Amino acid sequence: MKLLTRIPLLILLFTIPAAAIAGPIDKVAELIKQGNTHELAKLFAATIDVTVLENANVYSKAQAEIILEKFFKENRPQSVKIIHRVNSSAAYNFEVMHVVTDKGKYRVAVTMKEIEKQMVIIELRVEVEKT
Image 1 (cartoon, rainbow, N blue to C red):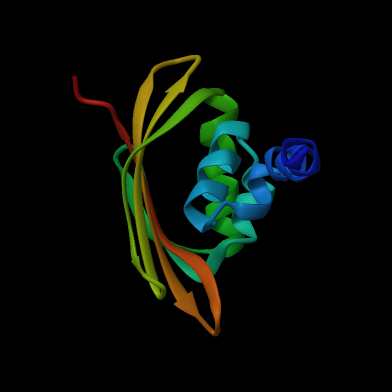
Image 2 (image 1 turned 135 degrees about the vertical axis):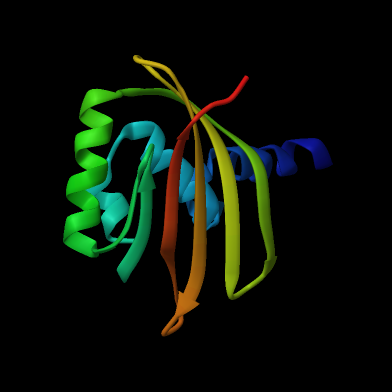
């Protein structure tokens, strides 16, 4: 009888959306997988250090969005796998992802920092995956 009263609780537990319990690192990975630069740009700091392949510079939020949008239009993401994460500090997160696109494999590193009580991306690097 106890089992019957616990089944609805178990069903509820397993139906909670993963996004509701996912942290900022997981959110970034999901947005990259979708190639959703508009939503990703909402997580950018006012200025962000962006490296895409050989081009590196510090850009405004809007400029960085345009650069990443161009990259993802030319390289449509197919899968993303987080291969390394550092989230032991509430004020600093770092992740490295393996991103497979229709044109090749890339390594994407993202650094996030808490600024004004919000986690924002301060650095994003896209490099060709070295195998």
